[in-house]
Amino acid sequence: MKTSIRLFIILIVIAIMGISLGCSDFTNESKSKTPPRDEQVQGPLASGQVVNALRGGGYTYMEVENNGERFWIASSVINVRRNDIVAWENGSLMSDFTSYALNRKFEEIHFVRSITILR
Image (cartoon, rainbow, N blue to C red):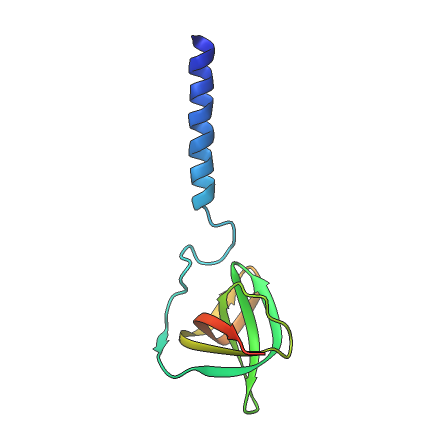
């Protein structure tokens, strides 16, 4: 009987630990999965060529070039490569955003909802 109770308690403790670990954010990023919003940007589909891509903190950060202008966008993790053409819609412009996972500060970066790889 004592063995059954001990086993039951151990299983409960393991379950609670599993739940709490599953809810933890192990990155140094913001506690929220949604980045804070400086400015909501609504508009038509935009596109550009990936110049550089980095991963960290649950995001893919992409330096994109469009009509000779380079800027940074970020979305949930996606497999992009240099020279891919990508498109996106809707996002939030962030100024002076620090990614602790990348140990890097971005003067401006657009957090977008989704990325489509065109080619």
